[in-house]
Amino acid sequence: MIQVTDDGRGGADPTTGSGLAGLAERLAAVDGLLAVTSPTGGPTTVNAELPWRDRAGSRAAAR
Image 1: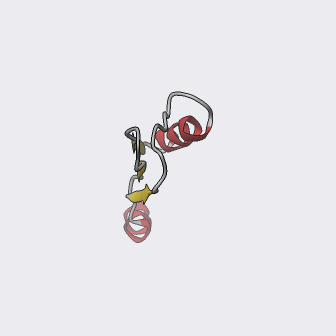
Image 2 (image 1 turned 60 degrees about the vertical axis):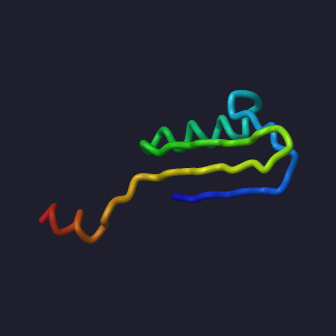
């Protein structure tokens, strides 16, 4: 999980524009999630959650 918080004015909307919407699409493509909290007056917090895969375990299982 990755969390980014700023000290800006807030009001970010992932349904408008292409920045946050594009990030949400990229995360969804790998079964990840994007959550944006951005009340008027700030701060904005963006949480990106990515699936975890144990690469060493995956190699051992494939043998």
